[in-house]
Length: 144
Image (tube, rainbow, N blue to C red; front, side, top):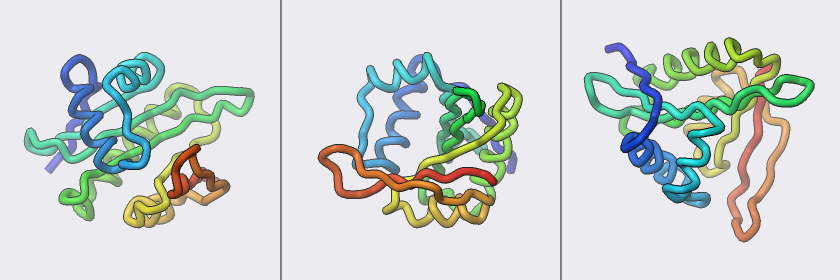
């Protein structure tokens, strides 16, 4: 089965938000926050046979080092079927096409599947931080 990637706009932003908030419950986003992000970042949804399997964010390259952030989230029931690998490859290509020289990602520390996937995909941890009022750290990783 092939993954279809669709830019999240209009009503699809609600679907993107549902996935984000389910996978990152410690930092839920409002509809307004998602709409704002959609103007600055590439937000997409991944579908297989018409069923959503995940979402992704590509933050365009910034700074002198042209650092882009690529985050792929696969809903738990669709993990370990190769969708994350296919989705990540496509979004990495998007980041590189935008001129990224360094690619980073971020994973909630409690998402052990996400951390294992990032490590298996070649990402290396370089920082951990906790948002104000939270207890669970986020883990910043990069491709060497």
